Image 1 (cartoon, rainbow, N blue to C red):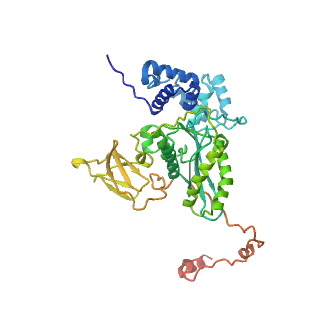
Image 2: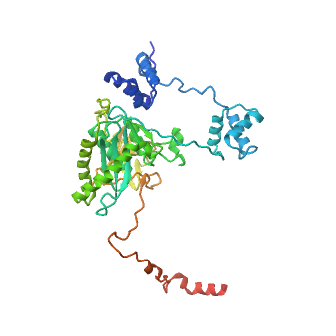
Image 3: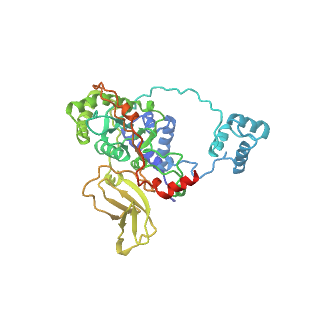
Length: 456
């Protein structure tokens, strides 16, 4: 008897876990379909495959197969060449009609659009129907979806620094699962917020978020060497965290789509600002302390009972290292002297029994206590001691050393106070004398003035 080995993807493995838990908890097919983002019929097929074949039945049947209707590369090049020369300037639908009637090429209009879009062409005539919006019903179980977002606002009304409030609200109950103040909307803050959610409640099934650079890469960015080798775009640090936790991300196409968390900001910008003013809060630490009390009061007042009382937060397993998961991870190549360079720092690797890791690809974990851990094939081969003072902010860094995944907002200009009757001092700006170069300015040097005089 031969055993067949099939390697499942993370998504397929996640489906197997959810379907197995649904069988034990008695969740309906509709609830499981909403959790996995599938139809009810597809969930029924997956359950049948899991029951008859085991986890192997969840693997896609067309894996490693070419589509039967794939178009030859020569056909694609011919269509692109015709559009760039003979039919230049045609809209895509008109060009498709010419291919059928004149050139005798039978291909669907969707394929034509896909080919031309991949080649960098856009249709000159755009027809877009008006967007239809409809209210989405709450999910039935707590933990099935968290809506996350950040709200930059003058929360302290000038008494302290301008801050950004990061929060996560449960879609089924309206409870605030996690929230904290940061100096700006950054990936470090979202990591801290998600760790609070995972530690106190568990791992949610899905996360509903916007298309901020913290959550997904810009499609216009050029692919790196690692991405070309892997054949896919590398996720952001937050996207990598969600993949490791097995949480499915749902990107919102508009603020209205994640209206529950947007309405939360309206409530907090009214009630929380008043509470902070009443408590005389002036610093970020005091604001975070008051925020915990405000969140508890908000959940007590405004939370609602879900349709299904069973929460679907997944518990944190003993094998999950939270410090090694909630950190920033980077790829590096070990130098010939068994060192790893990390943004100006050099980490010496001392292998067991003098083993060399030169030219090996390793993973550097920048943990939030200030320490660095180097891993090779899930084995820690080097680490540095935690920082004496734990850093409050760790910025996600790009390969060229620049900070990314930040969202600084413009600082508002100082306006005249509401109680002052004096207009801004604009007359002083009008009468300000223009600055003159100093006596030793390079323009006043002898050879410069002489050359200018000769030209004149």
